Image (tube, rainbow over all chains, first blue to last red; front, side, top):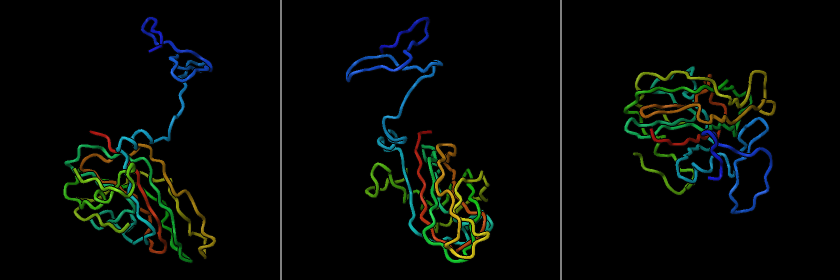
Length: 148
Length: 79
């Protein structure tokens, strides 16, 4: 590390630098001592490359009455999209983004209103269909990861 | 959009609203005048589904008069 340690405080350099490839240089600071960084790749690149990002998509499907909170949030409920994490899983599912894109809207269509995130814990026998259709984002449409 | 939560124990709780708002039909009489809204929410790790958990997006009102393409993206992090 090229950073200086002075009284156990890591030192860095404020202002722009002109470094060549292979040079060792200090970390850059702003005028208020703020650490300056920039994204080298896309926001989710690192974790996607490491195979930890998954996605699930459903194309052009008609809404059903069971997609609504108004019709109940019990075992007959049907989310627009969601995930189930079996109790034997060794991971947390950290939600990054979600999309609902209308593809066909009938004349005089009834709006679904707003959308709400709904969830429950302690589920042991919920059907595993969400999980079996997920795909690793790194290998789109090529491989379905088996359930743990 | 068609997967029923068979086997769900008890019922789901409403956690929070989503920024997704696909259309507002309150004053519209034809599809052409329906107002589009945000179709994507950047959750960015603010919701976590732990082992044994289930999480889903639901509309507030019952409707069968539109179709949609849906998606969800998540990262798996060891507990």
